Image (cartoon, each protein chain N blue to C red):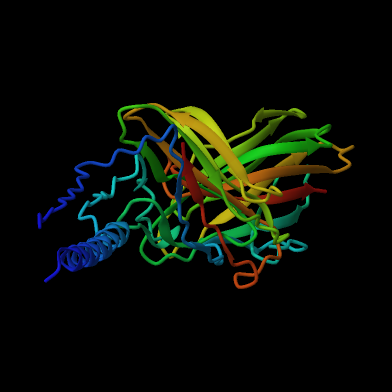
Length: 184
Length: 182
């Protein structure tokens, strides 16, 4: 084989190897750019009990005034019926209680829908710290709301006053009286 | 040809989220007011007396007398078959006391009487009574005794009638009564 022909063959072979190497590198770069993986990291969640809870007061189980008044298992709401007295002003002490079981003070805000039934002349909660009135919450107000601070470990009691006008029949003045609670 | 292995390790042991303030918003349920009739309510006894639509807002008329008069004005029956209630009267306003020699409004529970509001020589000498026990399923009355002078022109006594489940007033309801002395 002539010497020049052999050199040409060698150059051709080298060129072929370079092309193959280039393809391999290109493939490798492409593969690197499309690497996808799934992280196995995890985030833990925990349910922390609310710092301020509701408790049943001494009158909650009194069948003269309430039917099945109970605090829900998570201690953040209550259910049941109030037996108001048609045509009379009823006052019941210590219906439910608000307790701050946290290590620091909290601010509690009550809100509810207005009771616009004209048979209700008075319909309010009185929040008491012993004999001291902390605040009142009036359902007949346009936008019922009340806020109060409660120190760590302290319990306040809530008294209920409902004055139904004379002429309010026993079936014509039923209204819900929920209580939304915010803690901040 | 050399093989290269790329090892990628992802690690996230703990995620910490700092929150400046927390606002918990409790969902509310729907307890309900279910009005009912009172267990101790008024009923008329004397002529021209009324008890009100819900038996909670009464009026009565008692005729005064120069020689003294004792009238059962209103009944105050306890319809609860098993539990007692306690009642007391509190004077909230009055007029026309001039020429009243003596008058009293009280409660008779069938076994005893208790003067609750007392007027002596044209002035109020007792404006509030003490609690009287109303036995379960009992009949009780509000009475008025009057002794007036010759120029007596009439008087009115307005009062709150408090019905309590215990004398410590842990729970109660208030009714109203107005007694006219003529």
